[in-house]
Structures are given as structure tokens and as C-alpha cells.
Amino acid sequence: ATYMTTVTNPVQERIASEIRDNDVVLYMKGTPVFPQCGFSAAVVQILSGMGIKFKGIDVLVDPSLRDGIKTFSNWPTIPQLYVKGEFVGGCDIVREMHESGELADLFRSKGVASNA
Image (cartoon, rainbow, N blue to C red; front, side, top):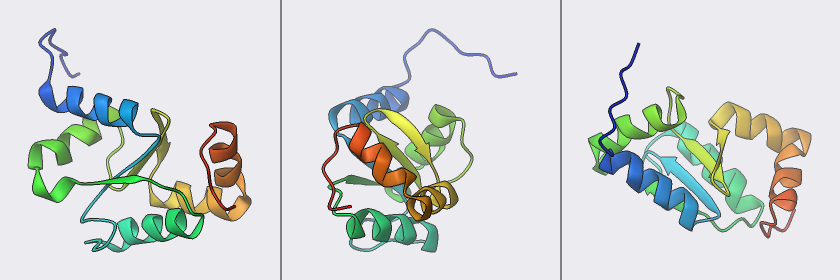
């Protein structure tokens, strides 16, 4: 079991503030313009195709962030999509939700503008 200390973790704080300050945040490998992995690229493509404005955060530039985001969400893989502070999921989940129309519904229900 992991022992959580009461000391605030700067990485966790940073993640919390990023997802609080931006409606849509994608923790990814690489940048939206130059994704460094196929899964990240796939999610960028879906979001861009829907006309969603999002903030891409490159975990490759910061190993502490790369580990931190996995701890934060309790999710083992990157990319990770957050909408209005809520963890949505990784590539497979985002893709399935997009295909079923759930993703467009989610953005609508959260008041995030899209062209979907």
C-alpha cells in the first residue's frame, strides 16, 4: 500500500492547478503539433477534429510529471485526458467515447465548445 504523506507534492499540486485552470487538458508524450507516440497523436486528432481547444502537456520533458500524472489519476498510461477537472481516460476510452458520441455529449454537458 502507498503511504500518503501530509506534505504537499509539488507535482500533484501542479497537475491539480493545470486541470483546474484549463477546461480541457491532455497529458501526452510530445506536443499537440509533434506528438511523440501514436496514442497521444490519436487523441490529439480526435480533439482537433471536434474543434476542441485543449492544453497539451508534454510529460517527456519532465520525468516527475510523467510519474506524477499516473499517481494522480491512478491510471498507468499516457495520454490522459481531463475535462473540467475530471479524468476521462486514455486513448482507448477516448476513441470509444468518440465513436459512440459520448465524448461530444460529455463536452456539451460540461459546457465545452466543440464543432461536434
